[in-house]
Each structure stands twice: as C-alpha cells, then as structure tokens.
Length: 568
Image (cartoon, rainbow, N blue to C red; front, side, top):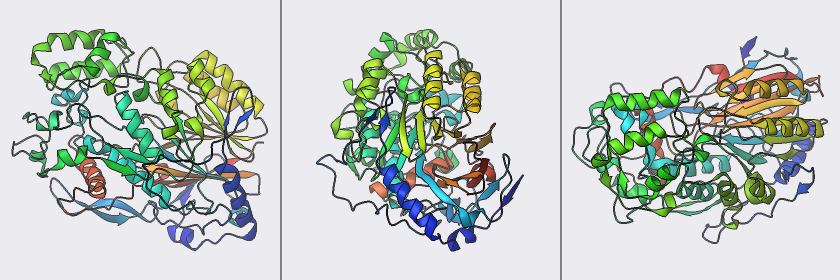
C-alpha cells in the first residue's frame, strides 16, 4: 500500500509547540552522541576541534531553535536533469521527486502529522569511493570488455565529496520535521583502493583541512588519462578516444587542476564511520597479499589488457572466486612487459583493519568529533570495526563490520560479531535501534541469514541503513525498514537525510530524503575551480559510457515516509 503526497504540503507544514520542543531535545542529545563500548560505559565525545589549516566557518545552527521544515537543498525541491538531446548532455535544474508514503508494514493514521514528535535526525552518505587514480594496482584495463568498468569522473572524487559536505552543512534541518541534523554516518567504501593516501583524503574532507589529491610524481600526472590509449577519456589530448566518440569534451588543464590542493570546510556536525569492502580489501575483493602490496607501492602499472582477459577477471570477482589473488597475480606477471613505469609512493600502501581504525583516531581528523568517529582505542587493540553509540535519548545506533577479512566483495558477519550484536540489542532493549552496515541484506553470504533473523527477532530495531549496491532501494522486513542509499561516485550521486518520528498513535515514521551535492548543475565551461570541478564530476558521471541508468531506484526508493508499528 502506498500513496504519493504533494511536495507542496511539505513546504507549508509548520511545527506545533510540542514538535518544536522535542526537536530541540533531539538536537541536544544527538549533538552529544558518544560511542558506547561493549562494556556499556559511555566514552565522552571530544569537544569540537579542527586542524589549524581549516579556515573558520560559521557555527552550526543552535539545536534549541529548529528550522521550519523545508525541502530546500533536497531532491524534493529539484534534481539534476539533462538538457538537450544526443550524446554528451549538460545538466540543469529538473523537477524534484515527490515523497511517497509507504504503508507496507502498517496503515497511516491521517491525523498523525498533528501529533508527530521527532526522535532523531541525521545524514547518511555512502560509497564515496575517494580514489587515487594514479595507483598502480587499479583495474581500469577491464574497460576493454566493459565500458562501465572505468569512470571518467574518478579524478574528481575529492571535489565531489567536499561539495557533498557543503550540502550537508547548508541544511537548516530535516526536511520533514525541521529537527537539526545531529550527526552524519558514512556506511563504507569511503575509499576505493584501500590505501593510506585515500583514507587521509577522505578523513580530511569529512573533518576539515587541506588536501592534495595526488600521489607519485608531484610535477606530473601518471594515470591512464594521458596514456595515449583510446580506451580512456583524454581531456587534454585530441586523441579520438572512446569517450570523445560519445561526445565528451576537451578540457584543457583538467588533470593539473584535479591534482591541485583544495580545502574542505569539514562537516559542522559529529560524524561516524562504517567500514566497507573497498576500505579493507584490494579492489574491494582481494585479501592482503605481500606481492600485491609490493605492486601497490611500486613503480610498475598495467594500463591495458585484452578484453577477454578483463572480462574473465570480472567474472571471477563477481562469483566470489580467487579471493587470495592467485589468478590476478599470475595475470599481472604474464603482462609484466606491458607495464609502464610510474613513480613509486609509500602512501599507496594498504591499511590493515587496525591501521584503518587507528587513522580515525588521529587528532588531525577529529573535526567536530567524536574522537575516532566511532572507533575507540579498544577497537584498535582488538582489531574490531563494530561499535554502538547514542543517537538521541531513547535511540541507539549500531555500526557493523560486514567485510570479509579473507576476501570477497560480498557481505560477511562472523559468529562472534553476531553474538556481540545480540548482546547489544538486548542491553539496549528499551531503546529504538538503528543498525548501520556497508552491505545490504541480499549481498550477504556468511552470516547474512542469521543477521536478518536476529534483527527481526529483537522488537526494537526500526531501521537498517546501508549501501554497497550504489542503488536506492527500500525494503520492508518483519518490523523494520532496510534503507539502501545510492553512491556518491556513480550517477545520480546521492546521500540522504533520515528522520525518525513518533506519531503518537502506536506507529513510527522514517522520513528518508535524497540530497545531491552543493555543486551547481552546470558550471561555466572551463571553470576549473573546486566548485566547477565538483559540477563537472556530476556531469561526467551522468554521461559515462556504460553507466547503470537504474541506480536512482523507483519513486518509493527515493524520498519516502516509511511507517512501522512501535513495538517497544
């Protein structure tokens, strides 16, 4: 059962006194969100700090003065839409997506809006895939068999993420309730190649500071986009490459501009981190192997591969095979003579699980907190990337680690983590629970069935928030909603706001609303400023040959009110 409500009603909605007071309480509790260790004691969040290199920014809106609900800055108001016809198309402002009311789990009381009380409000971003495009151990060469295997926008991932941070900072409150955003959660694949440089760029973009998105030789670009190979888009070369045959433009100076230092303001609200397979595994699939580490930091890079071999490698990964990389290493050895020389760089070294968590604890990346962004010294000592934290009064968040340490891009939950989760759900039995993970339910292999059964058995779970598929999808389960959000690397490059409310009639509502980055829909041609590059990032993603055109999902997977019974 579903129906579509008019977006204009959102703009006219005004909070009553009870909602205003509750929204203020949400902001105070949420802004002080803290990690809750396995022992149940609160580890206090650090006072907001920022690296000295971050320019001053105006303070976040006072949580005691929530804004009137407004669709401004969200896809309820407008969505990037193509202009004209033909091959390569510029973007402009398009009609927004209306909010769909989904009653799959319980019917909606038509007077619920008058009694609604906000309980939690936060932002969700996922699959940013911050990418070192000059990394020697990338798989661009698979594009010979699959055009979508390489993205022409990848050199601008840092610029796109900073623009998304700016969008989240600009939101006055939740678009459905006006409650202030208390925190942001990122659900993994924050990086692309599991390397230290990418993790540093991601953490700095989120917490604030200066980023130079460049590795190897600081004086020149050494990736595939000036290789002379027509397999890739050469923005500064007249070569008739695959992308120019689709109408891609020449953009003089782009590769140098993409590598220049940029400054991120950082989020003005606390943020938490969840790990994804690309943060923990080579190529998001292969386990840590010494030979692959040597290649990652070394001076040799493979730029091209016969299409049949690229397709065979893709099929091997999709089937969850060769997780130790034996076939990959054999293929790389066979094509050693075809590799080109690049500048080696130790910052491309992969991070172990403990190193990944420890990097979050670096004071340079604290930003608005909390220290570690969910990961604690205890997590580092145990090599554990799952934790719980206080979302708001009566609401607890649980972040899971669904990566497989033995390799495989699909989801995995160990028996030990399931036992821990069962204890946490019981310990916070009086709270409403929001679970976060990278992988979604259908992508789980080991432990997936048990995880879903556990979440359904505990009557206090209201939402499971995740990513991985790069596609918007909302799935009802027994008593809770699973909300899967599209990536911020592939079109349509989205994040979400999530608002939880008590409707005062025995039901709850989850309002989920997609947001785009703050970049203009179309920048001036030749604009190589940070903002112009973020705009180009979106435009290139829309026009990428071989891109999946279904990632926005159906209307009910985008902006929605998700009703569910309050079981606790």
